[in-house]
Every structure is written in structure tokens, then in C-alpha cells.
Figure 1 (tube, rainbow, N blue to C red):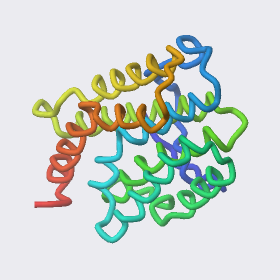
Figure 2: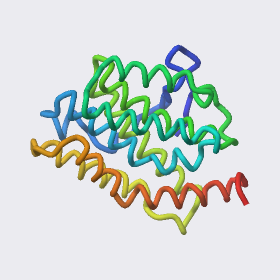
Figure 3: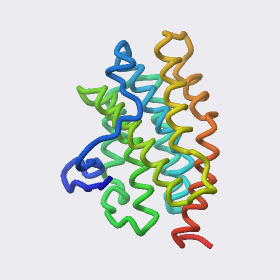
Length: 211
């Protein structure tokens, strides 16, 4: 699968050339989800990759990355579209958004940030299904690529991510009265979060970024 980074206003969007592998088909499998539930789901995907984002971010940038994660979690409760646009614009203006060199850690941080950006766009843009789907797809793709590079010692990150996505969707589809905060706590406790943080560190070692 080839990534083409598009140098447009939406710089951070990753366009998959040729075909798109859909890990979870929101339209087919979960047609009843409204915008707010789709946005909580997309935010859950951002939570799943949070350890990866913080691992690949430069130390001086980790506080900002955590702030965006926290703001997305707050947004899941408020649904404030203005805040969603503010988060989206801030991420798109981040220095990581300009990176197209896959040989540096900032590139992996950019890919993780795209999941956060898509989560914000699920609130901010008209086609909420599309951005929720992109958030899910990029989270799964990122996990797969980390595991592939680490090799046989890596946990099955893509499977863990898809399982975590389906678990969250099942909660949302059941019209649970759980709050967005409670649902995101479940997302944070998913096995993929801890496993991916450890695997991301090993990925960095394999790439020669840390010793």
C-alpha cells in the first residue's frame, strides 16, 4: 500500500493510492450511529493510538500532543463545533503535518496525528461517516505497519486495534446510557494501547531512532 502525502490545505490527509482496506465498515455494519456517536468512536481511535503518538513525538512536543488528546476527549462531551474546527486547524498547522520523509520519527507522529485530525473533523465536517471511517482505517493501518517492521516479536496490533474498535462500536450501537467520558475510558483501557506503546518503542529501535 502506497501513501501519497497531499500538499494542499488539508496537508495532513493521507490518501491511499489504488485501494482502501476497510477494517470496520461503518455504513454497512453500524448504520444507526449518529454524528455524536461516530465522533466518540473516532475519538476512541485517537485514544487507541495515543501511546504511539507520544512515543514518536519529539520530547518538546509531547505536552502539546497530550493537550490535543485531552481537548478531543473534552470535545466528545461538549460537541462544540467551533472547538472541533480549532483543534483541526491547530493540528493541520503543526510542524509534523509538513513531514513526508518516512525515515524520521516525525513521519510516524504525523500519521498518528492524522487520526486525531480525522476525529475532530468527524464533528466539524458534513460527512461524519467518512472521517470516522478514515480515523478507524488509519489507526488500524498504523498498527499493522508498526507490527510488520518489528517482526515476529510484535503483538498482533492490527487485530487488537480492530477488536478495540468493534468493542467500542458495540457499546455505541447498543444505545448505552454511558457517558462519552466512560466510553473513552474503556477505549484507553483496551489492550492495544499498552501493547502499541511498547511496540512503538521497539519500532524506533529497529529504525535506529533510539538505542
